[in-house]
Every structure is written in C-alpha cells, then in structure tokens.
Image (cartoon, rainbow, N blue to C red; front, side, top):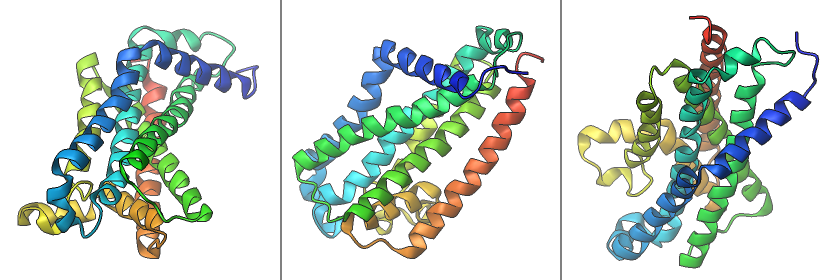
Length: 255
C-alpha cells in the first residue's frame, strides 16, 4: 500500500514532462508536423478548396488540424508507456512504497498539459494565416474542454496500446493511427467530396463528430446534437480505454 498521497502522481507528471522536453525530436515533430500541414493546405490548396468548404478555408481546416496536432501528440504516450514496461520501471515501482499506477497517471496528465500547449501554437499560427473565430468566452471554454477531453481519451487509448505492445515498433504504430483517422474525416474536405464508399465511415466516426463540434464552437453557433454526440463518443471510448488500461497495467510485470 502506498504511503504517499497525490504527491506521487505529481512527481510522475513532472517526470513525464521532463522526458518530453528532453526528447526534442518528438516534441518538435508533434508541433511542426501539424503546423506544416496547416500552412501547406492553406497556402497551396486553400484557394482551390474554398469553394468546397463554403467559406474561408482557414476557418474550415483549423479545427481539423487542432485535433490532428492533439491526437499525434497524445499518441506518443504509447511509446513512453511501453518504454517504462520494457525497462522494468513499473515492475520496480511495485516493490516500493508508492502507487505504481501513478506512472500511468503521470503520462496521461502530462500528455493533456503538453498537447493543450502545442495545440495553442497551432491556433496562433492559424490566426496569423487568417483564421477568424467568432466564439464567445463560453464557446472558447467549450473548445478547451473538448480538446482536453479528446487528448485525455486518446492518451488513455495510447496507454493501453503501449501496455499491450510487444515491441517499440508496434507501440509506435499508434501514432500512424492517430494521424490517419483525421484524413478519413471532414478535417480537410467536406464529406460530400469524398468517394461514396468512404462517406458513411467519414461522416459518423468520432473524429468527424469532434471536428464538427469544434467548428460549431469556433463559428459561435455550436450544434447541440454535435455536442451530445461528441460527449457520448468520447465518454464511451474513454470508459473502455480506462478499463483496458487498468487490466493491462495489472498484468504488467507479472506475465
């Protein structure tokens, strides 16, 4: 039984943030890649896609790139968790008077903080490129809550993936999943412009629902149905991911 209170989780959160700052390649990639995608789509394809988007393309694409940035950064948790498993960190913590589960909490909480900051950078770049949101303070608060929830849920999924992975390569594959899903959504083009065989999936998958909710908040006219759908999607996936993470963590170091 642990003899330390919440301080344990805070220590592991700090540890995760320090490790992130030392891993400059991943840190830069997590911010630079979405920003580069934003600039590419707005400056190279923006004029051609404005008609399909029904308005300024910067306003259309920014919510999708925000989730792309948040998702990619959260997905890096899979390799971090897997490293703690393979290096025996978790197994060692089980022999000490601390909550070993605090290491997972640290990864998750640090991911939310880290990726909210990196997503803010994306928003600042979007504003420089012409993004003009009409959100009120309450709607901006909704954007922050949705982003934090999205990062939290994807980080939990990434933690479960990292605990289940058998190699560094398989743990790293989750980053590909996190980057790929936004492309099969309405992040960059409306669903009507996609091939017919992709429309059903693209229209109803959770990333699309979250993007449309962000667009509604940014435009100052959130749709209650989108907000409810996002809440249900994120809550359901988060609950499943939490159960999987707890069960996989319980087996870690004992298999």
